[in-house]
Length: 340
Ligand SMILES: [Ca+2]
Image (cartoon, rainbow, N blue to C red; front, side):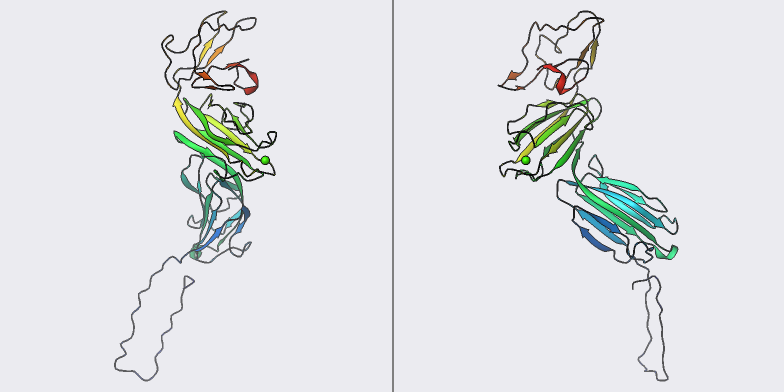
């Protein structure tokens, strides 16, 4: 059956067979099988059946948006309307939140203008229809894709789209790493091969949860492996841009991150002169030590004199193992690094 009512008609004529015992029918109301549709385009429009008229049938509809692995889904529900606020009749939206968990939200009554972002390449819209208590519902929503990922685990791997193959052209990807307060993030590139095209393709790393935070290092491009990067706080925002052409040998990047509790608290030094030293000095510092000192003298400028120094190792261009970095001023910013 396709509706919630059925007309059942029984009729007999003037002849009755002795074996005709009649009939017995079990009647039960069951939910009709939903109509499902898969959507794979990078953008598009979804509407309720017969939109803008109210859809008042009993059959549910499901739309499954499934995109390429590196793409995320942004849904904008520009219109939703239902004739009653039953609570049973609604548009459910299943998605992945920024911490990677599957969750859902829903629209019902007259709620409209909702924007839902899925941090995975999947989203499902489920129109739950209950025709006997209402005159139906109607909605219109647009979806688009962005290259975006979010990470919240203790460690993880970030890679460019289509890795280990050459990355697509015209990308603007973002990657957010968020850990609990008190942690910092260690980002180590294990593979790096962008076009050698004057930095038209590049990776930028911001020391915080968005691109409004300072750059942790100058834009990364070319094919030399970047140094290990450490965040100041518990989040990192990474952006990857590619222009209109990609060399077939440009396999992009692979980076792993780990997160660690900061071994020492931030320290502020304000006297006219003083000392600072690595934790436990002169005993060797511990693994994953992370300390920040802010030095503010009451007048004049700050002069630092290193009286002993045995920290990490230095290659031709970069430090590895461990490093001390001195910034001119009280903010972390790639443009204010005095010395590493
Ligand atoms: Ca390029």
